[in-house]
Image (tube, rainbow, N blue to C red):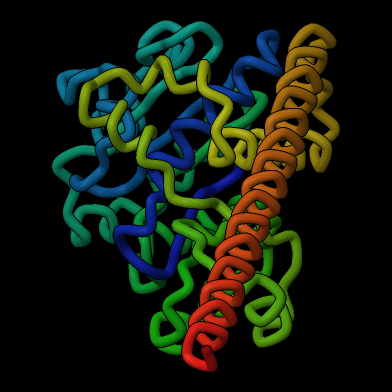
Length: 297
């Protein structure tokens, strides 16, 4: 039986869909021999499939729910009918209303159980908030939740955002402001927190419809999502292929070298700046002394 990992947030516009897109691609690269379902249950607001280059004309979760309402229909072969990118199977949610979801929640539940039996890993992009029965059902069936939060203390305090099955927390758009990682961890007694900085390059590539090239760039955002991906794989004892692990280690080494060079450059720049400042100060002292001597004469 497969595992369900749900990306969820208590606040909207937190970047969880773009995060799941990158995480899905990384996990698929490291686990090429397993079947992974990327499922968007963001109601009719989801754009996860668009990021993968698929249109809304593809089969939707609601099509499957409608098919399953009739008990006389044969079982669907999901491995044949779903959109696919290598070992990633893709399924979105379209034209859904809260009333429709509530009315057919048991069918949704059956379909999710079917997915868990067929796929080795199900990665879900769920609607934000806790007042949606479909989201609550998905969370209750998840083996783990990746909880995406922001450093907005008002949003953090506005309601309960911690779930019993939270595996990790991602602070998206992280900045060096209050509340920082340790402060959030202490206030809400949570652990396994990942700081995900803003990434202008990621947004630019998304705007240019070139997201598939993002993995070529070793940004702090990408490397952080990669570390989160490894944490998920280690948690569920999913062993990545050796070649991919080697490539990851090489990326980490290159990143360490870059950081070391940046530190050296920063130190030299500061030293040069201090030297110039000292020379300027000495010149000022000499000039002042010369003016004093001239006045005494």
